[in-house]
Image (tube, rainbow, N blue to C red; front, side, top):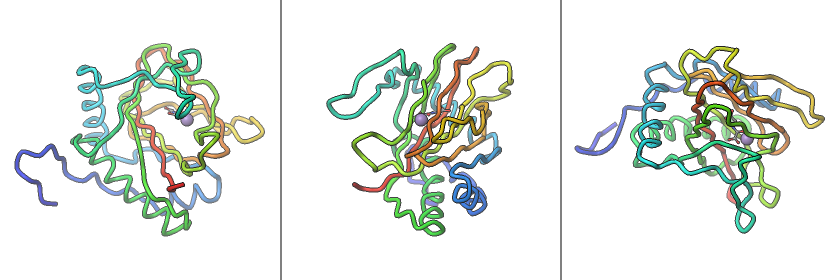
Length: 211
Ligand code: OGA
Ligand code: MN
């Protein structure tokens, strides 16, 4: 990679074993990959997110879309900051997920056109009630991803991602451990984020088709 002088760049993150993960996603509709990146990579992402929060770059999360977009703290209490190419660690993350987008298209013929993602910060006690990621009036979101940025997370600190099937049966409860990547189908998997006794950092992202 050529690094232009003075640009806000970071070397590429090492590619994960995308094809095993994609196989698992195809079979189960969801997949979890612990240690998807070395600690140095996700610690750099967490550091960038903290810096952005300090600069006031995070906005309270809203729910809905277009005209129905509104703030709803009884539904979700996280703050978010969208990743864009000007961010050093954030853009390395976008390039890393580009490798996964290509693997998803190559192996599952999903025809995914783009990936969007934001840093998410859940203050102590914040939660995100049961929801489905695909918006009611758009089928653009096909695959959801969540990547966790928290060092030394302990089970008793809570903050699990609770994943359900269409019938509402709990499939798994994933603690937000740094380096763990979770993928699931955006359309038909309800899930929620439980409150934690500690602040909680993650990157939520969606592979989309142009609708
Ligand atoms: C979301 C979401 C899960 C998590 O942002 O839509 O469900 O574990 N996040 O942070
Ligand atoms: Mn979600």
